[in-house]
Image (cartoon, rainbow, N blue to C red; front, top):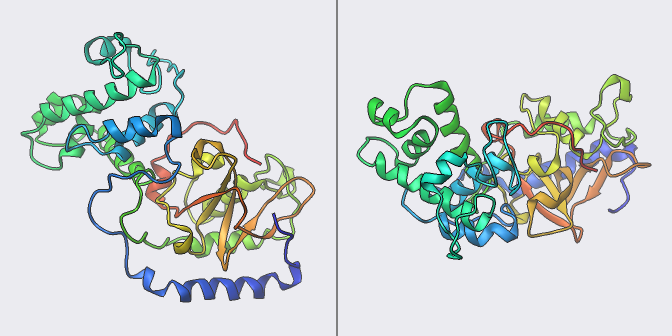
Length: 336
């Protein structure tokens, strides 16, 4: 990463690049997100070894999209093919053995149905969803929402209530998955500006010059020090948005603007594998002009750095709903 800008010049520098970036993107603010349903996947949002499976099976029926299937798999297992839940749900798609017995398919045509094999489990997840979509096809309302509600509460409940049933858990599940799907879609138009960006930047700029601390959350016992994802988490927490602790999960907190569409407040990510968001190792807060506020590494201070490095992965425009839709995977892991 490039060296930091002198702290004495930081505030005037910040004003110039933020104003300049917003001026250059003036047409973006009124554009919002384009309509329509995206069938493409955002770059690297699905690990490369599963991308072709998700892209293929995510178009199995009209109620399904690749991004929706990706959102379910990520929510269920975080792409871990060896995951086991306390309820004995197994594998990347988290099938309970009894459900697998009735709905698992031989997705790769090798003669067996292996609950642990993503080549069977991912097709089975799509197939099961589409079975449910068919079961509730005559129910009024949005076919995708009804399918997800049937997945959570059963087809009978959706039929009984004539749509998504009035269960808090089911309504929350439908909203979470449809919202989370936006973080896996390749945007079909301009991404709407963040409403909380300025407040997040205001918090982060007050940390400029603070020494970096691995695992730092800015607490008094840590002398207000942060690591990279601790800083971005705290910045958005200051405006009422709760992000996950780990950088590679923060990537799924909203849609993904292109490099040319970046606006102040976007999170910018860096990875050793540019095909896999799960390999993200670093995050910063974009402020405009090609710069981010960055908590870089041990021995350095929070500072401005350029984002255009060989490991630049992409960006996320954080939304309140997007962050709320993320599964809680705990705070054990810490990014650099």
